[in-house]
Image (cartoon, rainbow, N blue to C red; front, side, top):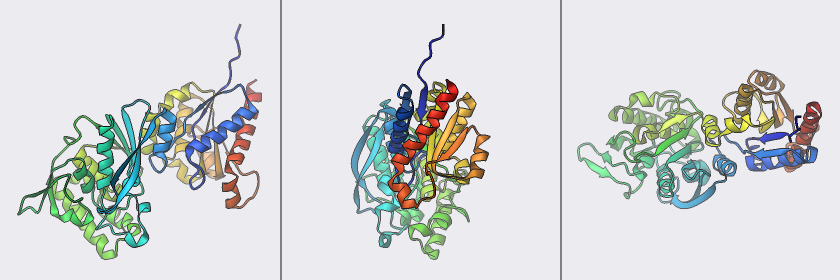
Length: 388
């Protein structure tokens, strides 16, 4: 005789940007599920795609903890408090480079990619290793820098040769290197010798090369304060750096230009591997295994539209559900019908807006937790009746 078991529901949303973090979204969905089906077995797995909110999402999903350190900010003379996450396995750290080297840490009048540095990001990598991490996941969105990663490499212990004729060295304890130093660097060590056997994985969802028309300086430099003359200088300097390092093949790889060339620097100096952000996060939290144990998966994001089909969390979750044959429903602040229809071919069962009618954005943001819980309750009620 078969005994009915409780419905198993996995809740794996991304943040609603500008409104709620993924942990808060997951909690609101869970509230609605409990209202509709009190006996349901609920598993919370806040998600992210490597950008803002990745540290909080992974710490929450794995039962990890936050660690705060004082490190160098985007400008060499700045000190900032920056947190990274140690995940529940005790072996993996997750870092958002923007915590130390982000544009949001500067006032507009301070924007200057010739002066900014990724040194603080390197200090966070070192701090994570000192805290026991053997694997590091680094998200590289939101940077204030165009330094090709030389500051980060310096902080990680790379001995960098400066001024070819003088053979001077820049060590980790010397003043941080910045974008304005790019033409002075002519050699540095190779591979990941500075990190030993530490695995460095970089969450990167842009495909820009290091230099050229779609490179780091032309595409991202202006938003970081670069003048047209500085854009040209930085683009030339990044190209020359790749040539001097004998790493033009790395410079041409998709993602090398991410975060002002930090993608390139992490590969060239520290032996890092660049991967799509969602895939990295999903593997870190064991999402595929969690999906396999669920009867229903609820995901979500602030807006489900055409951009969601290109590496965003909700569709990534749905794709894993499709492989496993598990129904997946997305909740979003707004749903583009065409995108939702396209997403069904990728594993999404259905998508619903949390708005119960036309409303101002300000109201939707203010009432988001209740709106999310209400729609989640309706979805699960219908599903539970259909399953009975």
